[in-house]
Length: 331
Image 1 (cartoon, one colour):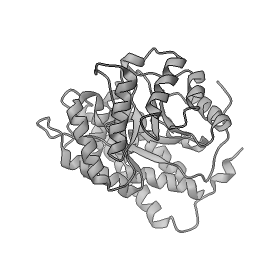
Image 2 (tube, helix red, strand yellow):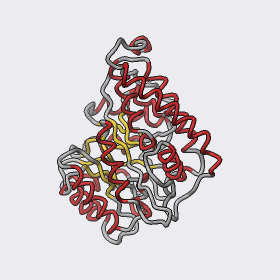
Image 3 (tube, one colour):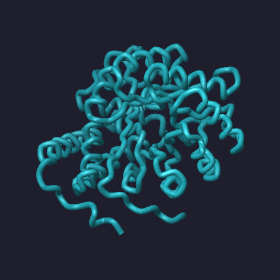
Image 4 (tube, one colour):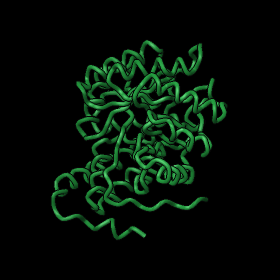
């Protein structure tokens, strides 16, 4: 275990939320509901991320991903969004393929994030840095993506020296870290703070969403379950309001249930949860997606009710005196 970086109370958190792709009962993508979820994410004050793992990017065709990118661009009207640059299964030079995908996302008004792929999974540091520099020649800014193999078999977590070297690529403005390891993320925050403080480490650790206390921002699938509750939690942290902790506790409780093995089934849990909340009409996952049992529903319903209550209470009272002061928790 490495040393823990200092807490960062009262900081503004950059929240990016991966948008769930919902489905009709017959297995067709529910595009209208998906568009409403994208809009709901902006309305909550978070940035939507499309064509991510939560959007079944690995199970969509290139044509489908291009269609969802085009629709996100149409909806955005200049608003910020992130989109996955996904090349798994494509033939050709990875650097050229990533540059092409990133350029298409940039042209659509989005910020590209580079999914890992099988072709580069075992590349060394020099090869990886060269790849990112090549993408940086195609777009002015983009994000990296460390993804553990518990999510997809072609995932990759960089060693710390590779992470440090990638900070020298100026167009790389941040990276999502999805190892589900606190220690690995704390290491990155320590290196980031020393080498490039403006670089964003976006936690993808749905089992430790409190990492924002130490300086991570986030790009999460868990936030898709309740964008309003995440936005309230983030605002509580910025205000120094102790209600951050209760909101975070219930969101983390939800995350522990949703992201249990098999981890990819969290997308079905998300659909179940959103349907219970009345946000989407059908809780069917992708036809080839992993499923959860209906026995989860009573537990999810209880969490949903508690989060609704906490979020509404915070919205009504956030202009009053904060409940506690998180600065007292700084060592």
